Image (cartoon, rainbow, N blue to C red; front, side, top):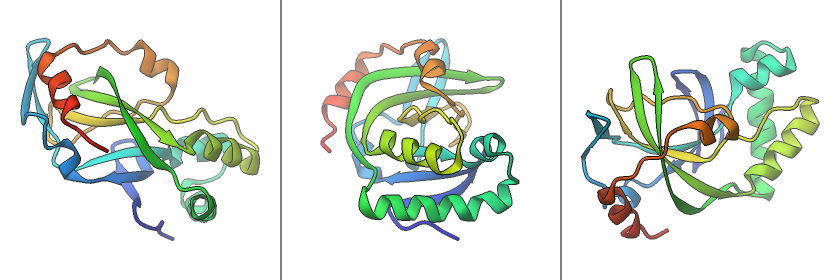
Length: 175
């Protein structure tokens, strides 16, 4: 089963996910390349916000990911028809994520209805999956290879990125 636009069910570095796709034009003000901690990072050529990692949820529910995915997609479709998950704002909060050779700069954001979705999702599946920390991966060391950030606690522990060029670009973004 698939999910309806603007959402997408896709495969990523940490398994299958449901994402909210974002317009490329939204991030046009950002430069193609930034340097942070002596590392050059490249602007991604697609942008999304990961809403749910199916593998994490299936492990908590103790169900195989393949069987669980269709149920999750149906659950997600039902919820978002009534309460769409939407981008409200981009926060002036850039973070640096690093996992092995992978490095990325992410931008935190605010979403409408994400926490309500997780409350309903956890209730229906009788699990306690933390709400995904809403963010957009803007830059990566390897082209378009992001890093899974599983919780708000992990996000808060990531170092803040302070680059005037990013602050300026963010001021040029209009949602």
